[in-house]
Image (cartoon, rainbow over all chains, first blue to last red; front, top):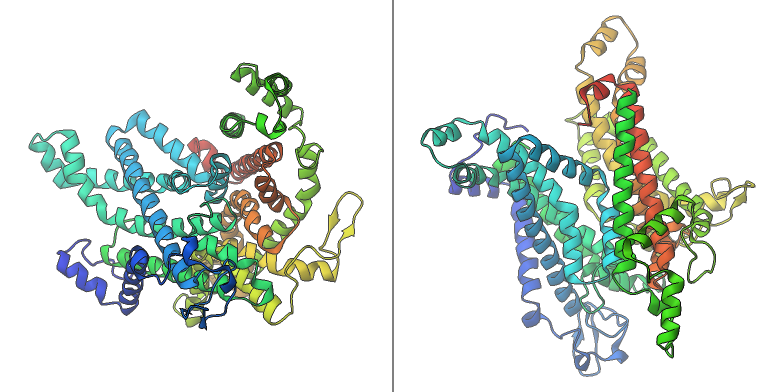
Amino acid sequence: MSTATAPAAGSARDLTRRFLSDPGAVIALVVFTGFCIAGFGAPWIAPQNPYDLRQVDILDSLMAPGSESFTGMTYWLGTDGQGRDMLSAMLYGIRISLVVGLASGLLALAFGTVVGLIAAYRRGWVDTVLMRIVDLQLSFPTILVALILLVILGRGVDKIIFALVVVQWAYFARTVRGVALVEGARDYVEAARGLRLGGIRILLGHILPNCLPTMLVVATMQMAMAISLEATLSFLGLGLPPTRPSLGLLIANGFDYLQSGRYWISVLPGLVLLAIIISVNLLGDRLRDVLNPRL
Amino acid sequence: MAEYIIRRVLQALLVLTVMTLLVFFGVNVIGNPVYIFASSECDQACLSAIIADLGLDQPIWRQYLTFVGNLAQGDMGKSFTHGVPALHLIFERLPATLELAFAALVLALVVGLPMGIYAGLRPDGWGAKLVMSFSMVAFSLPVFWIGIIMILTFSVQLGWMPSVGRGDTVDLGFVETSLLTLDGLHHLAMPAFTLSLIMMAMVIRLARAGMREVMFTDYIKFARANGVPERRVLGAHALKNILIPIVTVLGMEFGGVIAFAVVVESIFSWPGVGKMLIDAIAVLDRPLIVAYLICVVFMFVTLNLLVDILYSLLDPRIRLGGGRA
């Protein structure tokens, strides 16, 4: 880290200004916000509801980007094998990918934070046992654990979120425990103890807020990983059901047509997926530089 | 030393037991396997016969013990779709997967190590920035997407590389390999590269970090002061010391590589165990699914155990410090 002497914290306005001083981070923020608006606004923005069979015409299948349908509608990004408008399918896909990424990230964050704080607070054998479990969990490759869980559980939005939480919580638990232990040894905690504040109150009111910057950075990085992993699993046909196609599932559908030169069906959702993952990663990088947590 | 090894073996056995429990209860208790065997006009008597035949009338703990007992004898049941023992199928397909994983491992080392060492020696140059950007991209992008783009570019557009299957293989008596024919290597190149990307990114980072640390140590300064040629300083003294963490991480990651091979094999239709798993899931071939999961977990736990034991032999601080860091 080049700015090792920079203060670890500052006013919110100061942090915002430092965050925005990097053009890459601003672009990433704009791109990510744009995808969020596009994804969550999908039902209102999309030209058609790609999963309403009355609006989809099988005769319009596999049309190249820019083609016009019989009814005069233009498919700006082409259509897929079932005649769905790719633009609409992608907007809905973005929504599902983001929901899965956010939900699993937040749940893992919550669960991991609780475990990490308990370990840091209780110390002793509780700490040892919890951290052993974390070690064990982290020693297994994420893709292997997710694969096993999804093979057992089957497909579904709730199931993939569960699997992603299982593979992610340990990162949060370990990070939060580490930061909480460091913060717990600081003077302000000593001062709070001197005031005879309760242990739980010190933990939640004093130590937890100081763990937040680190948690935010880890959560951003983990969200990028979760979106990527969900896309991979959905591509394999293990993640989401065909009725809730995420970007990964759209790419998988298009993969069958790749050899015949109909590249747009899998390349376009793939580019969106890349843009989301890269922008979230860049945001995480910038947050880490600005917040400068002791990871 | 013996105490450390015994403790690690016990720990590995515990993990294996937990995994067999998870897989057994997961695959056999959630959902009812009877309906896979039963035809649509099967009445109650016929259903009970199937249940008795599968041992489902036994209490659940007895079913589990039977499962573990069979497992210990290498019996994982017969595949529904192929009609042969599941384990047999796995051993038939495993060489293709191991070949792919091995090629990826070699590729990651051969390409990643020089790149990482270079980036570590000149950390501020544009070459190092390029290497580190490559490592970040390889690490964060979904592997399946990189595979798809390679197929689109090199197979569909340019027509240079084959995108399906293993190509010509040579029968070595006990195993078939595509490493020894030009056509086989041609087929292997893209899948192996795709699979190696994550490992390559990891090797680059570890080599760079190791290099930056090692170059400031006293023994490197001393070797230089003694007039040892720079090439030997790097090749013999620095390399040896950065290799320890790299070998450890690669050893532990190998299980992940086998799991990731599922993705790569699906994209490139590589006839390994990963492709077989996806096919088995599509037709709900439970014995085959269970056999695959148990085998991969077994392989992973064994590898981890071996790496830990080897590591403790190499570095006495581990076994004396008690437990792993």
